[in-house]
Image (cartoon, rainbow, N blue to C red):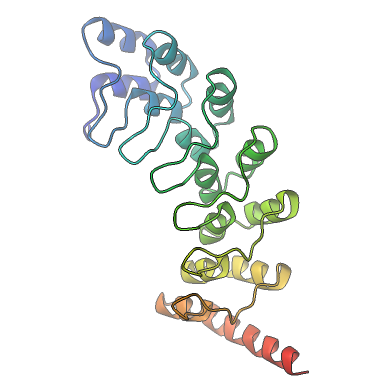
Length: 238
């Protein structure tokens, strides 16, 4: 099954007795599939607390075990909104809530990406995760939320935790560029109307958000942004 070992499959499905039997028969709980996704990653993503406990306590598997790209057992449950699993890993097994993947993404990035509002709030308010953390390309947690059209997450990060919606990536692409590229009408309106991002801003390649929207066939957003640019220009000239 896509390179999974039988033990990893059992862990993912929560079959603890099978995990123990396979281990007694010589199966190595640390053996990953080719991507590095091991039994503890599957158990954590599946919310199987008893299996995670056994893998850590009985087989001494680290709660910070990374895959080939640095994805830890904490990234999966954060992405899926598995609050109990995140608490178990962080509070009981001392997993680092600010652990970064190879590209710099933290668990809070994966939670924001999938719109897990309560998970993002828990990670920041209760566990000390940095709400303005950026990956290696400079994309912040809020940038990821804008890219996926997660309006509630963007509002929470900005209004509750002081994240700046205007913070761009290293290349100069702002959350507005991301929202326009992906065709998120409500997010474009939120960023321009509520958070006052300029619809005429340009990244380092001199592309505007409307350019990105046009390149990806989002004609309605192109029209809306062009209207917003005219309003902006008129206000500047007044």
